[in-house]
Amino acid sequence: MLSYFQAIVIGLLQGVSELFPVSSLGHSVLVPALFGWHNLVGAQSADESFYLAFLVGLHVATALALLVYYRRDWIRIVGGMLRSLRSRRIDSPDARLGWLLVAATIPVGLTGLIFEHPLRTLFAKPLAAGIFLTCNGVILLAAERLRRRSEARVLVAAGGSAEAGLDDDGRIHAGDGRRLDTVGAVEATGIGAAQILALFAGISRSGVTMAAGLFRGLDHEDAVRFSFLLATPIILAAGLYKIPDLLGPLGDGIRPQMLVGSLCAAVAAYLSVRFLVRWFTTRTLTPFGIYCLIAGLLAVVRFH
Image (tube, rainbow, N blue to C red; front, top):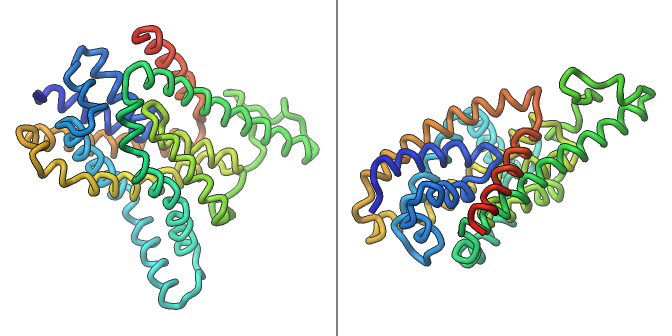
């Protein structure tokens, strides 16, 4: 049904692709198809299946890895929110960030409850995943292009020239951009609503939220921090909501493989978030956008 080798591969894949802006759902469809694991491909778009129950464990493990990495942030955020409830005032940056995360979670939470199942059964197929992965690449590249133009306008308005502000990588240094603490509730809700696109296999949750943050003028560091903080409760809640599937008949015969795969996913996710946080201090979404374009187009050719 599900071998330990498959569990390890899919677990590592989940841990990496959930956080890298390349779509874990899309890769969980495409990689088994490329390997010829047709039982997993068919199970992905089935109404109920052992593979979906297996993925529940991987999602919970990924969310726990994020929670561990950002544990200090979450302690401050939860503490700030509790104090704000007692005082009925939002009087600290941590409380404000916590309520922004709540506002940003609502759109995708409601949409996911209603549409996750029909969208998955309809679009969790190799050809559709390839098409949406290509779209994901376009979104990432467009976000960087618009961000670059915005930085250029700021630089020129300040009396400089776009060419003078370029570094060796061709990135414009026109300041740090907007900080996360300047984002309002409506903007945070809009950034969170971008996650709805990730219900389509091939569109990255982290990618579209980072792109939405860049569209609103955030710098890369704050965009990735908000994206990962926002992803933690969403992924964890989605996994816990589906836990009965894993504990029920669908989980029979795959629970040991799930434990192995979940361990791999947790380790891969923790290492991925450490890498990406450092990456986005100096680099951009562009390499990931190029990868998604190439991989998506190749998948369309392969599975059309």
